[in-house]
Length: 388
Image (cartoon, rainbow, N blue to C red):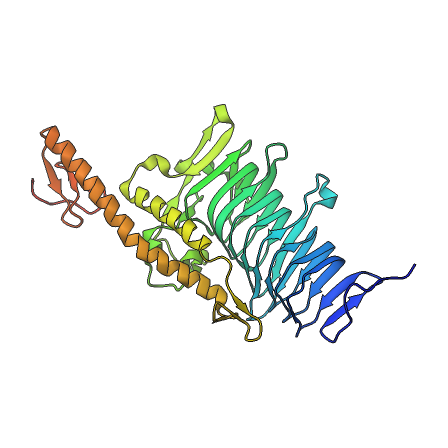
């Protein structure tokens, strides 16, 4: 039986018909799908403007660009140097109930990776700098050691198959899991909600010791809110280097008292929704706006010849995505803050007048407060205004 060559042998694409392996060499630029092989590899510098699929394994090396979906039971993205690896499409690992056959996505190396799309795999491991603009579904296990920025929801496990997640040095939008979640140092939630069904949320300290989040004195998850958004000290407050290095404490956070168990539903929840602060309402509105904005950044144009994405050099594109999102967040932040403040002021003033209660206005923000209030319920300023 003769072996049929699936790809033409060129100086930019190497195909081995015996192992059924396609290797896209460093200067490869193509728009034809690379699919239906056992193994596929992109050497450093290759550009593929279409789908990439292999039955056994896909390897994508540093300084590569893929505009299209990537699918294989085992996908490895190896980053290196100052030039990023960019995937503009969904990543899918076929699911298997057998752990030894579980699909695996691994991102590793000393460079940077940007993935714009949804990620689905049985197991997911990030051990380097990664930015994901999209949701992550880890059906069995998730391990993120970062630094990583996930501008989307993370979901781990399923109703019939509980999973396990360990996250540290990472910023994520929200976290939902069935099974068990371990949070380490350097974690940030944009929309501060982590929900676990059928399991617990644990805290792992710097020594590696794990305790229930509510019982650990040092447990802390940063909330990405207005103080962080407008911080002038770092270029990327979403993945704040000062916070990751333990050099900043000027942020709002979830602590041990924000953890609760809902026994009748077998759920554990980490959230600040119970605090009922007006500033929290504004922050939640901002978080929803962030989610909408990041989705609008999908499907960029790629010029393979100049290696530009939306007219931005690909080496600058990951940073551009983050800065563009931050600019839009800041534009929306002032509007949301003013709307919440005005609504709160009107409601409080109406309440005080209808009930013939005296009140004072905060000298800083103008929000009405009870006459005996020591700090403003809106901005926290020490009060000293006059009775209205």
